[in-house]
Every structure is written in C-alpha cells, then in structure tokens.
Image (tube, rainbow, N blue to C red; front, top):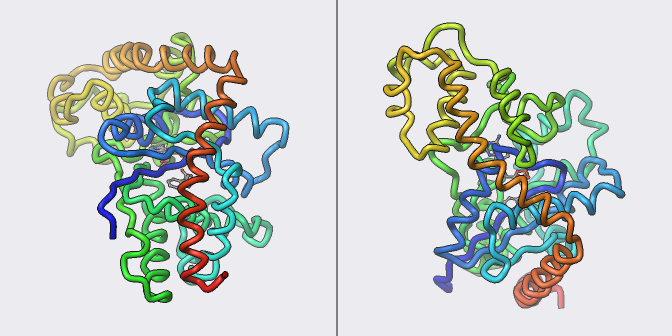
Length: 334
Ligand code: AMP
Ligand code: TRP
C-alpha cells in the first residue's frame, strides 16, 4: 500500500455557510492544505437527496466555492471541484451500494433525523447518502477526512465499506481505511436559540446561526439575542453542564480567541453574560465579516469561480479514472 496521505472532504451547496461549518470544517480544511495534498468537493449530488430548486442549485454551488476560497483554500494547492462533474462518484457509489449492508444504513441517525416521522416519503437517495459519501472518499483513496462531529457515524460506515470491499475482493489494503479528523474542542457548534440542536443551514430562524455573509450589524443583533443564562458566569466548567447555551457561547469565544475553555471561564468568572456577548461579537466581527466581504466580491465574478471548478474537475478526473479502472478490475467489470 502506498504511504501517500491524501485529504478529502465535502460540503453541501444548500445555502449559506455558517459558523458551525467554519469552525467545524473549513478552518481545518485550510490548515491541512499546508501539510498534505487535499481535495475539497462541493457535493451537489448529496444536496439533491432533498429537493433543491434547480435554479438555485448552481448558484449555491458557486457560492460554496466562493466560501471555500474566501476562507483561505488555495486552488493552486488543493483540488476544488463539484461532485457531479466527475461521474466516477456516481459509478463507484453504485458499486458500493452493493457492498454496503441495509443493516448498516438502518443505524444512521442523520437519516432518521432528516427523514422525520414519515420515512416512507424520504427519497431513496437520502437513505443511501452515506454510501455516496464513502464513494467520494474511496474514489481518491483518501486517507484523512476532516469533518464536524455530526459526520462521525458516516465516516465509520465509510471505513466499514472500505474494509468489506478489501475483504470481499481479496485485495488487502486496496482501499486505505480513512481516518476522521474531527476538531477536539468545537466538534459541534450549537444553535444560538436552542443549544440542544446543532447550528444548521436548515434551521428556520436566522437568529439561530451566524452566517459567513452576515454583516457586523447582523452579528451584533444575533449575539445580543442569543440565549444565555440569567446568572453570572460561573468559575468552573462543571457548573455549565445544564446550561448548554451558555457553554456554547463560551466555547465559540474560546475557539475564536485560541484560548482554552478553562482559561476563558476563569477569566470571565463572576461577569454577566452581556460582558461575554460584547467580547464575542467583537471577535466574530473581526474574523467573520472579512470572509463575508470576500465571498460577496468573488460572487461578482462567476466566470472566475466556474474556471476554478473546471480546473479542479480536470485534476480530480485524472485520479478518479485511474482508480476506477483498478476498482472495476477488482470487481470483475471488464
Ligand atoms: P454540511 O453543510 O452539512 O455539508 O456540512 C459541512 C461540514 O461542516 C461538515 O464537515 C460538517 O460536519 C460541518 N458542520 C456542519 N454543521 C456543523 C456544526 N453545527 N458544528 C460543527 N461542524 C458542523
Ligand atoms: N455528508 C457531509 C455533510 O453533510 C458532506 C460530505 C459528502 C462529505 N461527502 C463527503 C464529507 C465526503 C466528508 C467526506 O456534511
């Protein structure tokens, strides 16, 4: 087996990217670029597992691409492209549909959450979504996958699929078993309105999240309105156990200031949450608004964004075709 390290990750083009995507995934994508070869994919085939307005879908692909670039992904270093333009993803997904087991998919909690109470009405694509995710990763024989904690279960399934393929087709080490890279402290950023739910693009209230395109004014308003606690900030993390909103705000602040949560809590002990909120809004504005402005600027030049995707597609296709040739051979599809 080759020792080559290769990073792969994907983000769905389903609307505004937010602080959860930024702290849980994008920041990590950018720092990994310095250490390894990286492939970052706008996963439009994943997005259509839930109906997308066709007119908006391509705009969202371009906006997600702009967000990648605005947070610091470098298209000369990393491969940046959209999934549907490399047909190998869909082809390998079919092969992996035949390797993956129904029992494995039945355990996926994201399907249960997204399908809601009427599972019979969910698309078949939504159900087999994790097999497509495994195909994304294995198509490039990626070794490392940076994601937020919500994707941990899907990553475990990808590992199981890789292992079963290697065993079924008697090709030990053919697919590397991909390692998840999940940020330790902020693996899951929670909603600003209800910290039992993760911050998400699909949550109805815009006050639940900080979008990368939010203005300073939006950020100030949202942080002011964010749920916290009526008591003052306690001196130890343990006392925050039953106060998820307060813990979420302190965690976000700790991450953005690169200080440990312990340090932040001890610095803020005894202060009111309004004090934390003012500080938090300040760091958010200085880190997020320049990204938002860059996204807006990039979106003015759609042909540039399309060019980036085209170049990325060409590079991705070369790797994908070579690997697919070997995969087809292993399966006996000659
Ligand atoms: P998605 O927008 O669902 O395609 O997610 C893109 C990336 O952002 C994935 O790696 C997710 O795990 C990560 N992510 C999404 N929401 C959050 C969140 N609230 N906290 C941390 N990471 C997140
Ligand atoms: N399922 C991931 C999400 O919703 C996106 C994704 C698709 C992905 N394919 C991937 C992430 C491959 C990592 C690797 O966030």
